[in-house]
Amino acid sequence: MKKLLEEARKLFVRLRRIKRVVREIDARHREPLCIGVADGIAQPKLAECFSNWRALASNIPLEITEMRAAELVTALRREEVDVGFSFGVPDDNAIVQEVAWSYPLVALLPPEHELATREELDFRRRSGGGVSSLSCVSVPR
Image 1 (cartoon, rainbow, N blue to C red):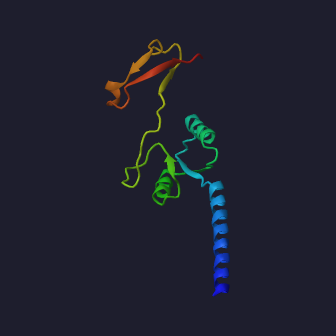
Image 2: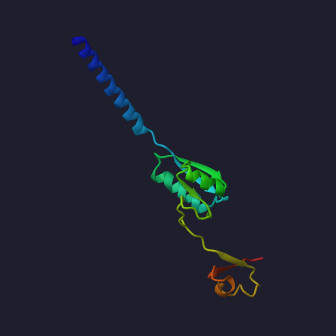
Image 3: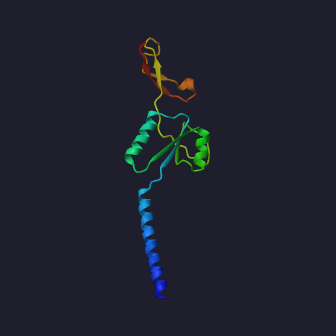
């Protein structure tokens, strides 16, 4: 009985050591944040977003994968990526889509063009309501 008790104590000591080692390994290990990027969306704003992430959470690596929008939807459903960036995908109950940011749309015109004298163009009547106005920038020739 004494021998069995000694072996049990040794076993518990080994288990405590293993548990401590596993906790140390877990504390150092960080799973990467997997990001899917679709539709050729490589833009300065997205690059800035990733750069800011690396500055704020340098201990969590980013794993960025470029794919088509349909592939991105599949990867999100299968949880192969944590988040995706796209210009939009068809509505899907398994995916939440939120606008991350928007860019202003700017009309570029040569300086001699009759519309170049305006600061803003009103497209509400012509666009069916999709585009309300554009800032005008005159481009020298």
